[in-house]
Length: 425
Ligand SMILES: NC(=O)c1ccc[n+]([C@@H]2O[C@H](COP(=O)([O-])OP(=O)(O)OC[C@H]3O[C@@H](n4cnc5c(N)ncnc54)[C@H](O)[C@@H]3O)[C@@H](O)[C@H]2O)c1
Image: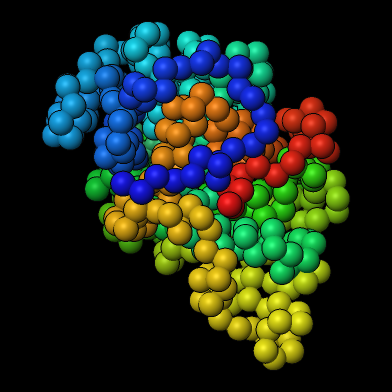
């Protein structure tokens, strides 16, 4: 397996974690072995010198499936933690673990990551890392007090195209970045509801909340493109949501007008639009669109004083470089020229390793950091900045789209922090 340069992930912050014996394997426990947890587990089990001594899920059959996967990869059977909702506490307390990966429902993320950090284990937590501002601060406070790093597993920050765009920006092609757009536009209605139209845990929120529930996939690359928390930061945001139409339309179409779920009032708007203004006066538009029928789309766009990149167009315009004045040119040659080291050095079969490769890169970076007892590829400040949009968008919608202030999770350090994410060699 091709090794990825640790330097690609490093930043000049020393984590206060006891020095480890780098000769032994990295030992990771996984909490939540559902759809996502299983996928992460299968990637981890394929990374050299990674051991999985423990798995936790409230559903024993899911732990059993995970155990089979790990033994199939030639490792001893991991111990299963299945007793109750809080069995993860026992897993986190094990002395033979270096890190914990968390892929449970959203309400569990922050408290599980906090428990892991307090037990001295690196935490890798699925998206979004937190549901409330209090949880965001608890994550920040815990990592600062314990010195144990925690990272939200935002895989879209590691996409091949997004990392090439990052290199273009760092090479100065777009000049000073000014405006970005991003979206999570994905018809998830059959993920929210089961085959009988009953809401799964993700779908239950459609009846209780109105917010952007899933802003981090869009925001991941944008944070690095715009040096958020490293020279600029979110200042305020405003959010509006459409009324809910999509779920009722879907349920009526598939199950008819008498389906019992149609009697429950839906609170979650179908399309949610947030505009963030940064303290430097830049803007980011974030769209969430998860119930209406549509193809998948992230709609990334980044624009600066020197030009623009548009994922939708698959194109760039770079002033003074693009062949025709004010006309798009294909992004393909830029993808090649600005290919990021993480992708240049990636294993040949990278595209088979989770969502076309980014999942492998984020986990490989996580494992390398744990092994080196160094900082994680994405830090807690970026993790909670992305996640805080869940709570802040809900506040703004509830106030008729009024601007709400974004907390400075770095406590002023954004002014002097230097960009660290995915520094190329
Ligand atoms: N990054 C990505 O690309 C991506 C993709 C899909 C899902 N996700 C995220 O992954 C997380 C899990 O999503 P999923 O689709 O796998 O859901 P899922 O329902 O398939 O899996 C969640 C698992 O957690 C278990 N669980 C629930 N409460 C628990 C507890 N207290 N202790 C231990 N286990 C518990 C459930 O039994 C289930 O097996 C979500 O946060 C989701 O947003 C991320």
